[in-house]
Image (cartoon, rainbow, N blue to C red; front, top):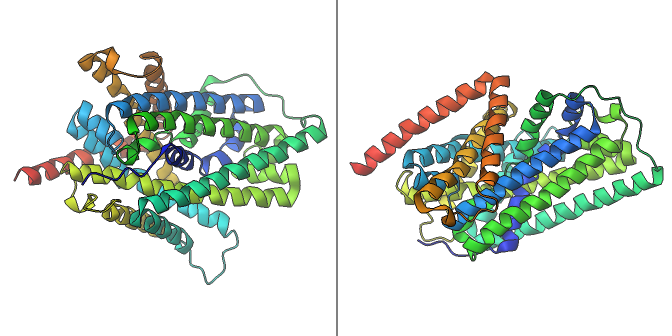
Length: 428
């Protein structure tokens, strides 16, 4: 069944913002400040991370103009490179990518929403309830789920802007920035290492491509949503992290995992700290909603192609209900049995490789169909910049933790085996 075109430009932009703004922006800069030793360098790293994400968004825009169906990396790599490459990208999403990200966001939501969890509330229940709520809203009616998500995203952005206005007022009233530590010599290795984690906070800029088949005028709106959403988030990230590292004293935030709460406490006391906690909760709710919306579209596309069971198709509904419920079930299973923090490094590594390969497929298209078929501003430099930087950062992450490389190899091997089994069944 052809999906109903329910999603306009505004909904696509909200989906991207919801996907991108999660826990990372509120936790990264304390560690980056410790590694880089300078607020200026931390903010510069967030600017560079934004430029990388924008180059990726523009490059993905060229891909989605060419292929306006849902499916994301699975679709692009299957159509341009080889079906097995696409299947492995989809396998990463099914096995860990969306599932792990949903579970992590939901568990972090529970941590912030219930900092002193009552005895009658077992661990993981609130996280699982949030996943179920998202599945119900997105699984029954796309328009209802999208409207709920849009409202939550508007609320989140309004709260973030409100916090920034408050922080700006405090800065003006104080008249001078607090004294900070004298930074040591600039280290390119430390800067690149901080970029690895900052880039994870920018992941999700490509969310619109997963639902392109349900977008109104997808050839025009999906590429526009990619760069608009990414630009909005980049501006928010740079402003927020400038507030986190410039306004408090150096010692108040350096090395802090909860840098947003620590900065808010230093800037405005308990009231500001509570406000930032509420903002984080709303941000995590929208993250879960957006991931539950995007991920199952990949599995529905794979089912349409016959490489996953047909039950995951849209099957007469305007939403891929079975795929959404399956995604929710997998996420809840991970919530109940796993500590996902170690998994996130693996997710960032494998998903960044998948994104880099997808953008690299633009060069294959250009060779096959001519450069005039690639509607990417700055081609070939824009996608080349994204591919090179993304692979370098993935290499740094892999060198830091060789287990990530091993996990990626296992994922590729298991995906290849699964593809062989599914295609064998299909041809039988």
